[in-house]
Every structure is written in C-alpha cells, then in structure tokens.
Image 1: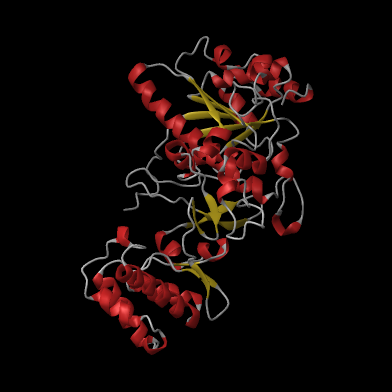
Image 2 (image 1 turned 180 degrees about the vertical axis):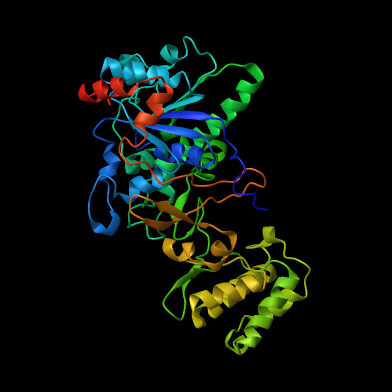
Length: 429
C-alpha cells in the first residue's frame, strides 16, 4: 500500500504562508507533512513556543523545545517583523506567491496591519485566507482571552470528561486538544476551499472558531439537548449519557486497568466467552455461567428488551460479569490480547508512550526517524494515522531553526544579499 518515498505528496505544489501562533501551529504541520510548502513567519526574536518545555536533554534553548519540534515539522522558517512597514511589504509579496495564508491573530489585528483578507486579495482573487481565532471574528465574545482549558470548558467537552463520582470536578485531556481540534477543522477548510477554487477559480476567507470546533466535538451531548432537552453526565471511561450506564473499566491482576468494552450480544460470542472461561478454569467460579450457556443457544440478543425481559437482562449481565472476572485474574495485556483474539472489542489502557511502542504501530510504520543535521542525531517521531497509496505522507525536514530559511525564501522574492543585510540591520527580519 505504501507509495514510493520519492513520489510527490498530496499537497505538493501548494504553498501556505503561516503567521506563527501556537493556536494554528498544528494545522500548518498537518499541511506541511502532506507536502505543502509551508513558510512559517516568525517575529525576529522567534515565536514564544520555542521556549515551551520539555527541552532536548532538559537543557532550555531556542532550538531545543520538543513542543516546537513537534508542531513545526516539514516547514520552512523565516523571520519578519510585521509591525514594521518593510516587514508588512515583504509579507504581502510573500502572500502573493501563496495559495493559502493561515493566521491566528486577534480579531482586528490583521486589518490594523493592512494584511487582512481584503488587502491580500486585492490583486489575487484566488488566494485563500484562513483566520483561526478563539471565538471567531464576529460576536460578543470575539475579544475574550482564552487558554486551551477555558476554551474546552466553554465549548462543552470538559463537561463530559471525568468520573462517576460527581463530587470530583470535570477534567480535560492534556496536550492542548482544543487547539488541535480547531486545527483539524482549519485544515479541512483549507482542503475544501482548494477544491472549491478549482471549480470557481476564486479563493475565499475562512473564519474558524475554536469555540465552535470544540462544541461540535462533544460527541452526542449537544444533540441530546437539541433533540430532547436532555443533559448528559460524565462517567468514568464511558460515554457521557443522560442515564448512567454500567462501569466498563476494571483493575487487572497486575494492577493495570482495562476497559472491558461491549459484552457479547450474539450466540457465537457467548460460545467464545465460555471457551475462554473454561480454558482458565474459571467457569465454576461464575454462578452466572448458566446464563452464558443460554446466550450461546440464541442467535442474538434483543438489546431493546434489557430491563424488561428478565432472561435477556440476565444473559447480557452475565457476559459483563464474565469479562470482569477474567480481567481480574489476568495481567492487563494478556486480557487485551486474549479478548481481541476471540473477537471481543476490549482495550488495555496504555500510556501514550506504550501505545507508541505497540507492535501494531511498529508494523504499520507509524514510527519515523527524523534527521537533525545540526545536532548530528536523528530522533523517532510519531507518524501519520493515514497512508496514501500514491502520494506519501512524510516529514520532509525537522522544525526550522530560527530564521533558517529567511535568505532562501526572500531570494525567491528577488531580495538581494545587499538588501538582506539592510533588512537585518533595520530589524525587519
């Protein structure tokens, strides 16, 4: 399935100018790793995320932030002071060579600089401009400050994340998931606008709201409210629902946890579960085994009768109790492999680094080596969750050093070495 490594990427030939900002950095990376020529524009002192820990070998430095490394692969990096008219002029000239401009400035900032969509498209109607802001460019909250936590909280996802014990507060996952979610919608918008441009010949301005992106990823919570005015409640390791569901997470014999997934629903599934219990000599310890055998004699269970049909309820509950019993007697990984090999959807709860080392990930080539010639070292990076057949995903280069490609990119605009020195002396680059 994998394409030749020298084949062009899916977005080869597409140029993106990204005005550096942590809100949109992941979006630029997604485009760059698909082959787009993403030119990252930083202020002369560098983007502030270069100072975000952790650092290589725990030594802080402009070029040592692993946060920076992860979010800026495959990009070319230049420095440009857009607060200076000379810098703004160069930005306009650069945008004129681009297919897409991605910016995450506060609403009104780009217009103040004379770099907003109307300014950049005055002489280039086919340019696509994507503005990624916390609440969108319009509305009463458009200027409110945010963090990833407050964004996710106000968007709704945090309400659904936490524990059965509601005396404990809601939680959110780490890693700036609100920013990452919004970036995925920004990338989808870019791809859609590129397709639309092929039809119409014209670009457009895309106004992405990070707040709205969070709200449309609350699983079915918003729809429960919209359809039946129901409010879901968070549950430990399970979908948030209006009515509580049965627990699915259990501690295994080695102290690790698994999620026991969905109990059997078909006769053949009950048969495999009985075989597993027998192989572990556990059937006699489970009084509900008699119901498992009744389940094995049925073709399927009518789940709509759970709670109203005593036999169906007992059979379904017996499946869950059997899984709980097996999980309590096996190490977590053995339970995971044993269940999956019998066609049962369960999961061992991995730490991210454990998932990264999973043999399935390795077999798919998810781990990729990225060369850092300046350090004379290479490092393993997470790869892509997808594989194109004919246009391979690849990390073309490690994240750019500060101003690494300024001379190269500006030379493409006709800036001479003499002018370059003057721009540097004037603080423009």
